[in-house]
Length: 73
Image (cartoon, rainbow, N blue to C red):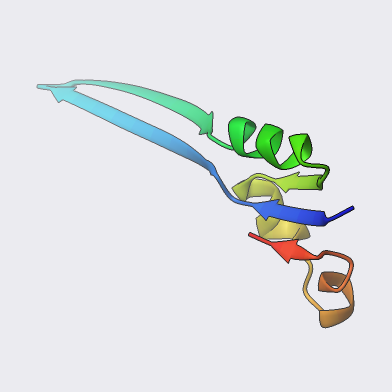
């Protein structure tokens, strides 16, 4: 079985609309990894997924940690 680490594929969008003194804001979180993960798993891969905010703190930092994975994307 192929062991895959998928990092990223997420984002946060922040919007501001300013009209005179009124400031309206909105934010949205999104991910686009679902179909990719499903495809990898359908061919027998084991996928560990780290969205951007998780990868920023938990992404493997050493060669030994990266060696746990056959593929890093």
